Image (cartoon, rainbow over all chains, first blue to last red; front, side):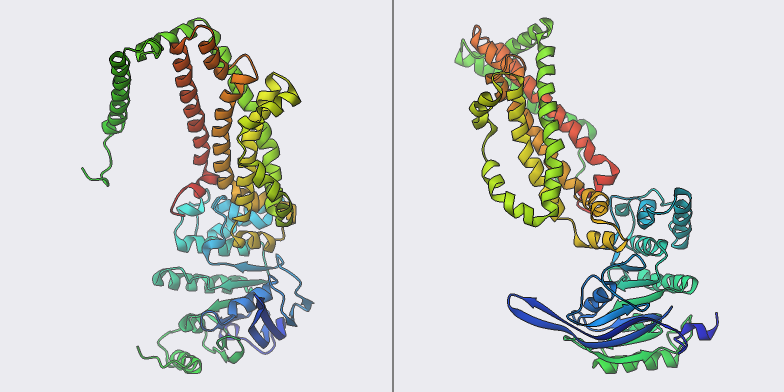
Length: 261
Length: 260
């Protein structure tokens, strides 16, 4: 693959824009500010990681982008339209908890395809089963699958409806470290093939630097954007290269952690 | 042998049989030791059972009891599931109906017998109405709880894929709640079988409940009474066993295992 594809180029047209978004949760008469004046533009086909400490509000921001929550103030636009609710063109991938246990692998992948004629639906299901390597498990139910397989199934279900954007909320958080590495590679491979715009929430600095074109570093609550780091390393990334370590260490410092254990 | 050891095949059969045998022996000798003239021994009950079978009334009674349960329970399923799903889906509606239901729910269907007789007279309808009442509330409550316990990730995923609310109910909420609904149905079926016996003692002149009370009233045939009681137990067990097989269906089995 060529280098220029692998990081954001200024000519990319804006897919998603977050304008002055603030969010306050009200509960028992107390109001907790969660997001404060967030501004962000994401290009079409770009892979952006939202990075921040647990509970900082990055998932809240992701939910607002996906249309599950509406911001207290500010606007979110996707492809020029204001976000008013969830939309099949933008699929939210939960940790593997989102797969439907009452449907087979095929049934899950075909879930969003109910409007398609049968033949086309089956074609798509077969295509995405192959893409995520679940051949032989077409008739299996999720409880029979491993965590990594369920996660791939949920990604396949999302991709099958051919969305423009994927929102991934710490999708690999519940997986063991080896499976997590494999899944990162798989996700990059799928992203190379399909070029969806991906917003990926994580609290893992290495994960963010390995995957993203840009890493959005967020502060603790109320979340603000501290810094946006361009990861100008082509894929596949050498995670012991000087540039990788430099970028990673820069983010560690930004968050206020010396990387010594 | 420790409690973790897998019991051997013969043990699985042997110990329950031994316990049953001991119980029968205890019953047998208790009848002899107490020299009771009224309570039958296991042997008498066996003869009584054979007599019932030979006179061909038994099958008719079993059929009548099962038919009443099928209609009463069926009506409770038919009305209770849609109502329960609706109330679970619209919490506001549930808040309106909930107090009334909480008052009606703990009332034993037996208490309704006089009311049932006013409404329906002595006959099948009264018995079926009582069975319906007994089965209806557990089904409604199971559906309400089932729907409100559906994890929000499933609903959100469904909405994300562009489902309309009726589609969301049919394709996400109902299947997600189904294991819990099945548990409610099973409890309701058990109650229906309890109620049919009581209802038949009062409202009708056929069925296993009628057989129990009729055997006592016409000549104090306690051998037949106990035979009928045992039969009621066995049929109840078979119904429950049959219903549990539904839990093995693959699209609901996930809800009945500890591991997910």
